[in-house]
Length: 168
Length: 122
Image 1 (cartoon, rainbow over the protein chains, first blue to last red):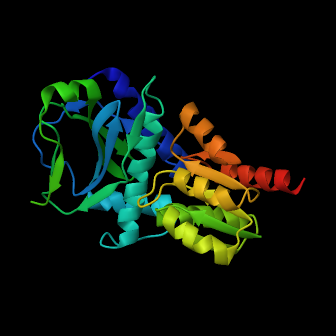
Image 2: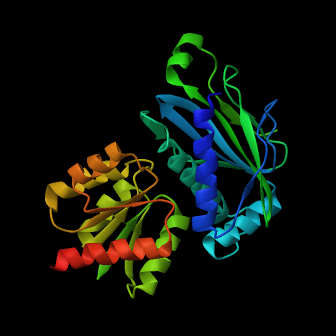
């Protein structure tokens, strides 16, 4: 994947965490993610369309997600509440929206976020698009941002299957 | 002062309500998308609207265009992750008076609200 699409997400997640959660975040070494298994139990997912297509996943252990949602909202929500999912969705929305604003000369739209909660769920991305996973550390625990995007022109040539999400 | 918050995220509306509360504004109506907002503006008659861009059913820019057909003067602040210059220009052309990019600090949002209302009162 072109590194020009990775740097904006790193800048964006740092900005969102410092601005909205007042919390520093450490960015660790990115890797290519293999397989469709979600890294952690809670996934905030957003789609990108336009000049750049694909998906972005913010993945947390449930415990970490709860602590981060509390820091974000100023109050605690149980993980099975709509408010918890809403807060996770808004975090991935802000990170993705802010990152796509840094893409140079690209017209990109983002979808409304989806949130999947539960152990062992799978997130299938297009088979022609590598997924870059960036592990991150905070004082409240670890998380990962997983980016599987590429330029739309390449998509038209390959015609591979779109992404999907399913519970295990 | 009556303020309408239009955002599909309840979390974001709560954050905005908290900022408005600190500024002393408590008469607030919430809408979860553009359609919901259109159905409520007539009865609520807001003095200021804070509108998100990306929402299901009817997005913020479509809502602003509809709203401006009948209301040319009530100030609208777009509060969104859409930070590209082309989007800001599109929003201003549609009738948005001020623009706040998410993520924002409470101070930045307060400043834009105060600035917008001061300009309106002048």
